[in-house]
Image (cartoon, rainbow, N blue to C red; front, side, top):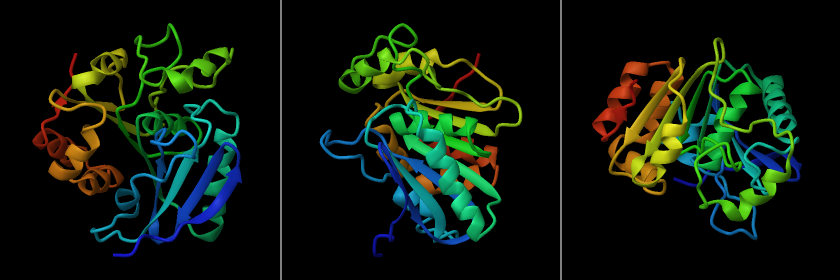
Length: 244
């Protein structure tokens, strides 16, 4: 199957937003992680999952958000990039449901987007609780990018925001091999399910879920609000529901 065509909707540094057009009234917004090459903007991620490849939803409309500044949703352009891009799509066709998805920094951004857009569900894989000194676990893995964020005296999202009443449903997934401290920093909260994978790491979790549960299955369950199915798929793949 040929790669989907990407059409640029927003290009104002540090953000780009690309569209894969499709059918139906669902929209998935995928946020990129920091990527592997610091000299280049992060590439689009979750292309197959977001567009519904291999499911009856294919081709589903999807937006792909990249942050060349690696700012964990702290740049003031984050909100305008999302609002403008989604408004442009609404002018073309109605949007009934919005899902966000991301890994690492992308997962943090997927949660932050719930505070800006009417997001129904977020799938957040390995989100950091916070990358600011003193607010989250002492974690140096992203220090090359996060050191400069400490100079922002009033960041919009000092910690990863979880949805409140009327703000949708968040699903957090953490591999405990190296993300235990990040995972446990998140509070248990209403409107949020937290799945823990003892045998997976920050890097291995998404490939593991892709192989075992099928990320497409998780997304389809999320978009239809089928919480029981989503939890069943995650638990079958080795996840454990976090409880009090």
